[in-house]
Image 1 (spheres, rainbow, N blue to C red):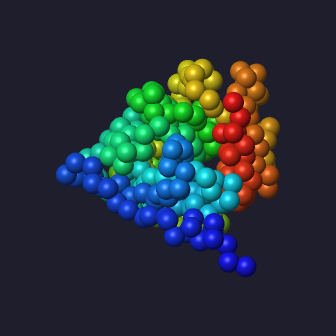
Image 2 (cartoon, rainbow, N blue to C red):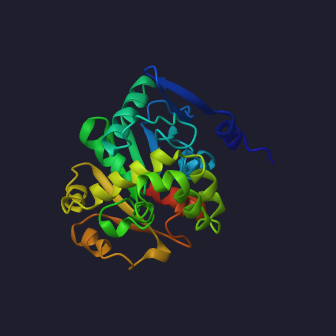
Image 3 (tube, rainbow, N blue to C red):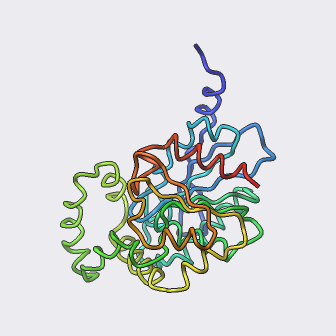
Length: 271
């Protein structure tokens, strides 16, 4: 049977690149629904990943009434790989806000994964009136969350660029989807981003800052990771809604997207 609703969703997806100033281009995927008065959901990917991590969101019936936009951070995916960019989360945030403003996105819900959670925290701080809610998908809150970025920093910068990256990528061979996106990122972006991620995650106030965000928020784990991180109980004790995505771990948007996006839809529907 021909599904007109699904056909609409598929046909309205745009894959574009937006120039920011003279030296930076940001790649994004965007879908605008007929419900033009509804805020966007903005997706921010994690370390070594890209906007493709959220590709299933654009076809998921749970999000059919939302306009969506997924962005490639500078240095990742199809966005510019700039050698002189700092790759600090605060500067990534500033670029993402600039993109959203140029696209007239207006107010939006934030959904960010892993390292992207740090970018999202900066976006909330830099542009508070625009951000309506924050769905944090196993985002960095403590040093315990730096299981990949910490390994990157085992390599000095010059060593990582010369040979360390190739060696590290061998450890990702059992994760082909992640490896494919990881290989799109520049080596400079990977190492500098890892350094800033570890630095920010070392701040003992990060967890408190997330818990105290005044906007609507939640934290989502892959159910396989339930009970593995001490911060989980702290979030619950702090009154942060915590949800679990079945049959998944850190890569929940790849492993069980339907449960993830139905959970997000239900969260956004609550008052």
